[in-house]
Amino acid sequence: MKNKYRNIFLLFGVVAIAIMLFTFDVSYEELSGSLRRAGIWFPVVVVLWAFIYLMNAGAWYIIIHDGFRGRKIPFWRVYKYTITGFALNTTTPVGLMGGEPYRIMELSPYVGVEKATSSVILYVMMHIFSHFCFWLFSILLYVVLYFHHVELGLSLFLAFAGAFCLLGVYFFLKGYKSGLVMRCIRFLQKVPFVKNWAVSFAERKQESLEQIDRQIAELHSKHRITFYSSLVAEFFARVASCAEIYFILQIFSGDVSYWDSILILAFTSLFANALFFLPMQLGGREGGFALAVGGLAMPYAYGVYMGLIMRIRELIWVVLGIGLMKFGNRKVEEKK
Image (tube, rainbow, N blue to C red; front, top):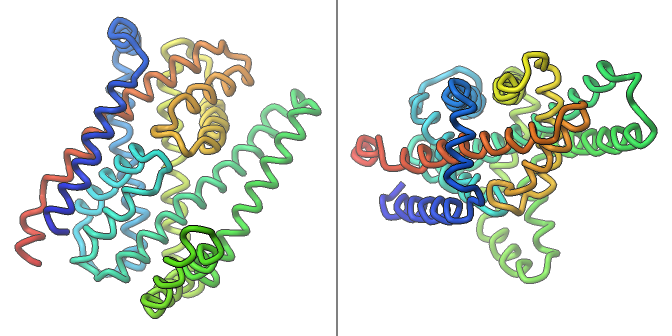
């Protein structure tokens, strides 16, 4: 990637961080008090995410190399682009608007634009697909653990959520079988204000778009090991991220199980993703945590405190991700 484009992404990230800091509706006393109460658990959850991002990078790395063959791009660069990509997505109001173009532009010198684009699209699909798999797993887990506590209203909610997740799984499997890019372009051709651009773009880039769709379809049909290895890595990254909730809840009580932590994250992520248009899902996540812990007969204050600690941890990783953008680029530019 040219340095001027990287600087644009950097400037966007710095501005977004500044906005988040100025709109962080927590006093210094509350912030310092929360960190003191968290004690050793706060650095533990910060370090935990280095491992989670490692699993995310592994899932993307598997897709880039069609499994574990070849070494076109060092793993540590994929790891770096993964962290920075998630940091840019976190600071974007609608999500998936900054991190993906950045990853494509950084990866293109290694594997070409088409391969970089298809691998990023495939990883985004896998990342979202694993969300639906995780939510389905959590619904089944809740029914198994709390079968006797499921009332009519909750049963209807679980049925609706399960149907929504199954629909999402079906949609992504169809996309993996026949490609997704051209379908999205055809959809945009019917949307007011962007349809003229979509028609022009499809005419100019039709061959490249069709090739990207073929690469997407080949992942599921011809490279099953690659597909399921990447999915397993993403799914277990989701399960591993529940350890953050488990560690934070240890501050209040040692009776919380890891299964409860999975249910809390599943419900909260489902609630927060419904508010995807908010940067860092401000407010949605905290509300989801409060409702989730309340549904498991825990004090609502646990959820609010948990959301605050996770917000601080996320801000730290956003700063690290944006900062990484300017490190380790000289050798790539010299090679290019």
